[in-house]
Amino acid sequence: MFKNQYICFLFYAVMAKINNGFIYEYDVDPELMDSLIGTVFAGDRKTKNFALNSILKLFNKQNNFQYEFANAVTAEINYTTVGKFFTDTNEDAPAEFTQLIFNKEALRPINLSLLFDKLSLYSNATLKLINPDNENNFFLFKINAITNNVSHFVFDVAIIDDFFLGSFINGKNYNVVFDLASVGTTQQTNNSYFPSGW
Image (cartoon, rainbow, N blue to C red; front, side, top):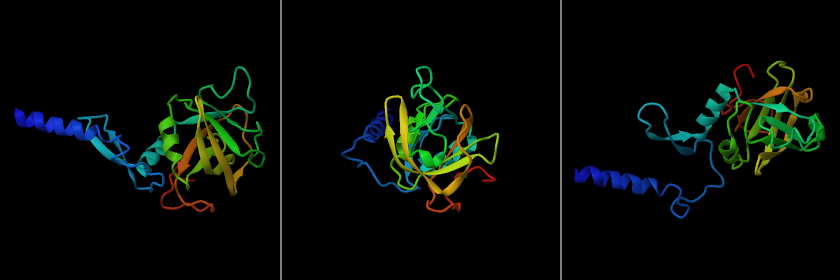
């Protein structure tokens, strides 16, 4: 009995140190295969390590995460509106804006704050927006920076090698797909998490 209590005490003592920034330094330059700690929901809810690339792969495989484009900010539709995304200039052509603004919740709805915060640590992250109703309406951006605001995230972006077709369509839903592959080229790499066929 004492042995079991001692083991439990050690377990909780160690777990309490995970968020201790003095013991575990913050890594501002993580690698693709670095791990995050989490809990398996099903079964016995064990605590496990998860590679960030595996989490992104799952995220993109589900691909039910959509945002609706809005080409204007109004009293009714603005950065606090769940499931909406905007450009900083309210323009719809990639050459005419440098920022994308996403509400913290997708249409599903699900809060993507944790994912966006983690992506902000990477210097090689890309964002692809795909119109599910038109394969000739897609956009691939390099993410230069992500800023966390109260109700939304601001993505500083640049289109990659003119790799896009069309302009954003007001009121249209777009699938959100992330990649941590090398940028500066339209060629996909082994670390790409685009859906099959892209």
